[in-house]
Each structure stands twice: as C-alpha cells, then as structure tokens.
Image 1 (tube, rainbow, N blue to C red):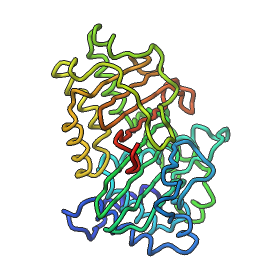
Image 2 (cartoon, rainbow, N blue to C red):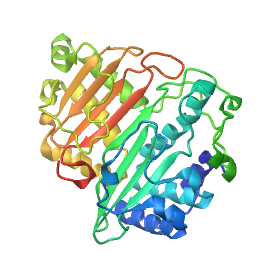
Image 3 (tube, helix red, strand yellow):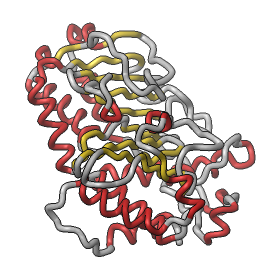
Image 4 (cartoon, rainbow, N blue to C red):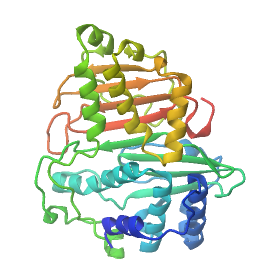
Length: 357
C-alpha cells in the first residue's frame, strides 16, 4: 500500500464519529483505538509520560533517530489509523500540506541520487503520545519528521494547544520532471511492508505556495515610505529563529504596523496570517482567529528582510500579541537552484506545548 493509498483511504473511509464532536474528542477516540493495536515494542516507542522532556524536544532537521514510532514500523491498518488521527487534528488544507511535505522526500531522493547524506523516505515520520488519551487530564501528541513538526495538547477532552506548527518544502518549487526510476532506493521497512515510496509530485508543484506568494504580494503593495518601515534588513537570515526551542523568546515587534496599512493591504496581511492559522481543525482555527481579534489587529506587525523577488533569499515575520509567524527561503534546493527551500513556522506566544513561556 502506498502512502498516497493510505491517505486516500483515510479521506474516503467512513469514520464513526459524530459530526459535531470537537477535535479533542475525535483525536482521543482515534488515539485509543490506535494504541490498542500496538504490540509491546511499538508501545514502548510510541507511549511516553506527559511530563517527558521529549514532549518539548521538537525539530525539523533530518535525524537518524527520533522520538516516537515510525510509520515504517507500523502495519497498514496502523498507518491508516495514524493518518485518521492526524486528519482529526488538522483542516483539509493542513492535512494535504502535511502529506505533500512528506511526499517531497521522494523528490529529494530523486534529486540527490547517490550523493545524499540522509535517507529520504516518506515512511520516516514518527508518532508519539505523551500521557494517556482521555477526557480527563492532559495528554499530548507529536507527529514529526524531516520538514514537518506538528504538536498538540488536549486537556479534559479539548485541544488546548497546537504549536509549534512547522511546515517546510525542499524544493519550494519542483523544477524538474522526475521519474520513479530515479527513486528506486527504498528503506528496508518500506520493502518489508510492501509500502511503496516512489510516488512523485509533479513539476511545478509548490507545497507552500501561498505562504510565499501572499508574502511577496503584500511586500510589493507597499509604497516607498511603508517599505522603509517594513524592511528590517537588506539580507535575509539563514533560518527561522528559535528552531527546536520549547518557547519563542521574542522582543518587541518590528516592521510595519497593521494600522499603517491601507484597507487592501490589511486584508492581504489577514489573508497571509490565515494560511498559518487555518492549518488546524476548523474549531481550533476559529479559536486562533478569535484570539487575534480579541488582542487587536492593531498590535500585529509585518517585517521583511532580503530580496523582493523569488530566487534570491527572502524572509518575513508577523508578530501579534499571541502569535509569531516566520518564513524563510534562503537555501538552495537539492538541485542547486538558489532560494528554493522554504521553512515556515507558527508559534504561540502565550506558550507552546500548553506551557507558560
């Protein structure tokens, strides 16, 4: 069964949940069912205490070993259950984005051929439970691998935190027509399960298109005076700040304030923020939106660094009272195309992982 087939099965299957069940309760039901299917070895990898230090140990870089149970160590039914659980936590857009980030591992394997340092495999993503899924007390969930880190906390049947939320894309745009013969190197786990890892996204695919295009559109709508406020550096930083850190230790916001934008530009900024806010299940996204409204859009700032056109390093961040968004595209892709490798993150300034910052 391919990863795409598993994803399709999740989308098309009949799930015995009430439409009105909140995401926290849906996640709890799927988590309990999945945990019940695990053998002793799998349980040892997947189940950790809620207060484990590993709960806040997140990162998106390639690693030989990660916390949790790898998709490649699951049978097909468990993999389907994992994606059902993930779908309960995310919106349709967020779920599709997560799956496409994983599929980009096939593209990387094809582009790197025999010269790659790391195994590129969409089965090398890891699921971890922290604490026992229940409608009483707190439990956490992590789904993580190269270029993807999704973290959730549920308390008393409600999802109460959903950050750090990290998506990345390498290549940011697929420039080449690749063939499945170029992805022939598969992991032992994939071969053992008969789970193909040779499905490729097409030329021209941009997994994080809106994150980049909406940013450029807003920047290039600013007049000279507004750009003087918005642009904080001539060169983009190499990466996002606070990567792998449990909390984002921000200072005062920089860049142009929402109040200094015209009506059209304000809508553009709101649309850009929505790309990040809307990645989670709709009721949780609504809570994120309401918190921004309650804190006031007048406190939101947009800052830019680097080039104002694609192909040259560029970066932006958006900061409000309750959130931080960072986007960077400075690294070349695996084929050497400049600035074709995106990192994008949403942080909760009231406390990631349901912790006080």
